[in-house]
Length: 165
Image 1 (cartoon, rainbow, N blue to C red):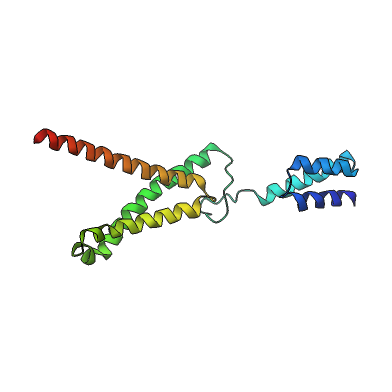
Image 2 (image 1 turned 90 degrees about the vertical axis):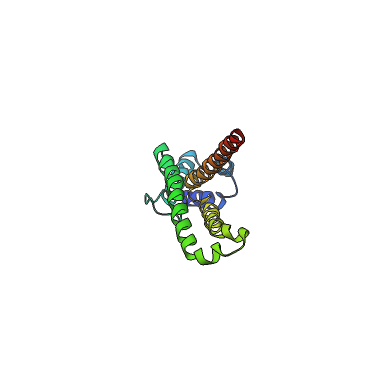
């Protein structure tokens, strides 16, 4: 019975105190070391089963517990190239849907399809930030690479035009 009380104490106060503090409280309360060790072992075993990764790559609802560098690299590559494919496909889709409205519209409205796909990507980053952080890192990396290449291209174009004039 003392073990279940110690285990219950660990479970009830796990979010409030660190594990070391809870073990210290059990020692002060007079529980034997064997019972404390058994309760800690059962507590850790129960928490590790609940927090274990599902193993499903496409499970984006539960937070992923990364157990290897390979999983992080896989999620990074998925975010980088997944966002690249998404941005190309969504640009074609949105521009084809809005082609009549965009090309006859004022200049500012011509950027609406691109801004719409960018907004969807930002929403995906916000949604995935606490669930699959390395996917977000890949998406943000693609955004930074794209902006860097755009500025590099504009710089080259600027210097070429200055050299020709």
